[in-house]
Image (tube, rainbow, N blue to C red; front, side, top):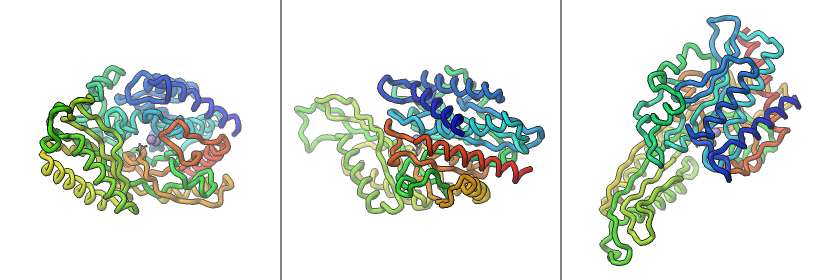
Length: 412
Ligand code: HGY
Ligand code: MN
Ligand code: MN
């Protein structure tokens, strides 16, 4: 166990060295660093002589086949893209735990009643094209072709990047996995919150994943001279966006028991000190455990934006980029994880919801899903201070091993 844990840590560090930025970890979809990290994963998978391949969108898949050719697939997975200025555990830890479980099964010649696969998803964060789950949407058959025309901050389209990395748009549809082929899905992932630290637990179960809507909001006013244009005659796009941002915060705080709302990315144009901004584009990320409440509050926020645009005579575009309902994790799989936790000496089997989105959200559309949360120091994530102790990695590896052995037993 110690050796396997050390190998995970060594690989996390190796991936953590691969970045598009000199000063921090950043591996946005389709960049040089993203491709290089994918190649490293392929190398590690091939070392375990697993059937390995990169699909059209860039998911990296490896399979340990059952002797029964008609067996179903069980997938362990997580993502290998990152946010900007990321930590090194968010995504890769789940992938590397999957590889360790598969390596142990392969080296010990354990017979599988199902094909066991680990998938490293190409884009969960959506940091480059603002549409999360590009990788897992392909697997679930929900890839929306209009995403191909989305451009990044430099005007480069998703289609160009996909093809530049050897992918063929024509293959995307055939890369999906049919529901009837799947036994289930398991995603080990850092908690990215404080609960496990507060409870002093290494791991816990996830009972569900919050619903999430991501919107692109564009405000169009009129550029003007900062020195000559009177305050009362301006169509200042940034002031409209600012008024909206404070309204979002107020509505978020008023509904803080069931809503989080974030404006995380904003472009102001022409972004020049002595020009009144005529254009502002920003994202809006809203989440709730309650899917129907999220639909309702999304409308409330859009109405608020329309009210501000009318009052200020500023143009408004409200584009919903993606919207996913809340997801329930599968009780049958969770029971096997509980058994695995007990066998690993963890008797407090806590269950918490995930406010963060995960590839399990898309895979839940074609299979029963489960997740294991792993403690990260002070719950810090999406931050270079993200950290998981070797003890917690070892404990999570033991639980992952036990869970898969329970699954093998149940299906043999
Ligand atoms: O935003 C999220 O919830 C995840 O980190 N992609
Ligand atoms: Mn993640
Ligand atoms: Mn993340």
